[in-house]
Length: 392
Image (cartoon, rainbow, N blue to C red):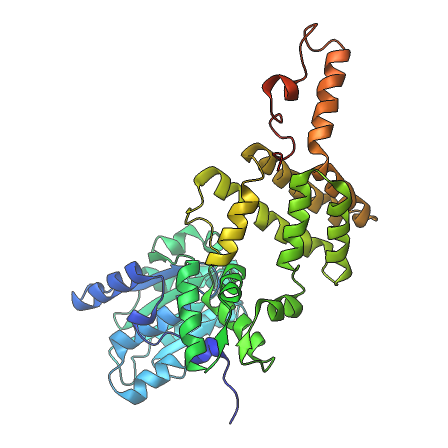
């Protein structure tokens, strides 16, 4: 028997299964119960958040009944619920064919329902052809348009639809679902792995399940963070912590050595910088908002370690370092010597306090500071805004 990927096997089958989209589920169910069905709906949101699943579930709720019909709708094989992929059928001829078939009444259900996926991919001519039917649709026709790029859907089309914006799924909801899936699959995983997978999914349940599928393919009964790091080439979290600790100490040598070790393990410069931005962001939130901030999603052990690391920085230095890493990321992509740019960034992060002191001294000696005034760092008794870290 052919293997079915997790994203399909655990796809939502009812309104109650639409994780993270409860307000939309309630609204659609109330519309059905009160018999207030519009002729056209627009479902928009990032990939993998449940738009097409919601369209099928909605179609099943108003057109289903028997197990056979319900199963056909949920697999895209029903004769009255027609799924149309606009990404591969963009031309006006495809739109005209769809419109022509809309004139015929449904075979077994009360409605003929058209689910048009990635509707923003239709050509201008195809949109114009569709518009006339959406203005005066036959009473037996319903349209459900799905898109990840709603700004590309003409305003004339949008104005004829009831719009529903699907939200990115919160990390904790993704983790809970992944935990249940692993239980069903008879596997276990480190908590830190689940946090990392959910974070990498960027609000998409489908992306999270696809990544989990890749991990399960490794054949390990217990999934670990190291397995994920090896699979995706992610930087080792402990090595990144060692690097940040060296920056907090203001020591360029161990900072450069930690960075060299990260790269020697096969991690790309871009991946290191991306991971470094995420870590610095977490440190900034913990510093500014407190150790219990829900804006930082980490396991208990990782949170405790991150709180300790965050205590060695001040907010100004973290803001400065985030801007420095982001600038380096852009420069490295277009440079013939990205490693040199990266190493210069590392040294600058580790020596930022000394560089700030030199800058203040140069200002004083050049006469830009009042005579007898002390450099900003020593006068304030701390590092200037944008400079280095706290003393450990």
